Image (tube, rainbow, N blue to C red; front, side, top):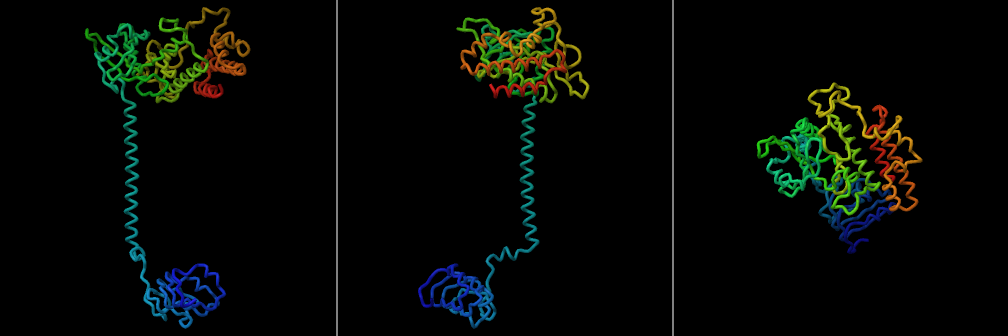
Length: 437
């Protein structure tokens, strides 16, 4: 193969010619490094690579160790090999790295390590700073509120607390619809400070709502403690406005002029509302720093937003309890109108007592009607409405859903507190029921 015009590097396929004895590739234009596989050929006794353009380190071993069997003349870029070839020594490709001293390596490693540690420490401190600001913002006092608002602002927002903006009247005051300057709709609860306990209710509600945030609790924007234009003391709480009013308005309100037909809640909507309220109560009882007992859960205190999501409101009677393993601290109690030990307060005369005789009550009536006679105790319009809206095969599922709801209600309303279902268990049952219905 000598005296040709071959160019490029020698192919690796030549490595399979291990039985070859002589190779003559002289007087060509081969380039690149001399392949090392020639040093592995056991029978190679003559290798002529002269007058090519090979470069780099000459391999060692076998034929490369025999000067008389090897010819490399005319390859000016070769180096290394055995001393008898009298070729120049090969220079290191990266002398800086290979000749780097150990102390220099340690110094560079230490510098990079310190820089990395500093960056990690900075990231941790930055994260902690953000979390601290978030927590401090969440725990800010409602009396020193998120937004500053005056009596004049509320007077303007409610059109002078006009009767046209009156939403409802409660135990300790009236609630008005208002529009702030930035077009935010709010509900303004104005305390009737002539009522005994109203002022205490104001501070109780502030204390209860100061550190709690939940999607099923009415969001409070701010509070106002000032004087009106006559110099009288004025206290108000400003809440997020709920366009669909209260649950009571959907369950019991008579037909008004604005309604063409009575309000009606489907079984699915009722199930969603029950689950929302249970989630709020579970949060208050089990997920607050100090458990909070609402003490006044009723349809008028369950408010509905534009998507019919339920929000529990009116914490004027709420009580903040101490941990179960510690004694009650007097200033942790924000009870209004209820005296005695913090915890369960047994009711007196129940609203349904006059409806039953001979020891029968609403709770026992529900027990008696489960499971076969459940239609006799539920709202007939609810059953008829669902029956009209659903295909016949689904009616059995509706009946099972009603029975499950009544069972949960019965378990949560037993006379002795120790016999009642825990709120987190009730919530889990309701969530499972929602996925099934």
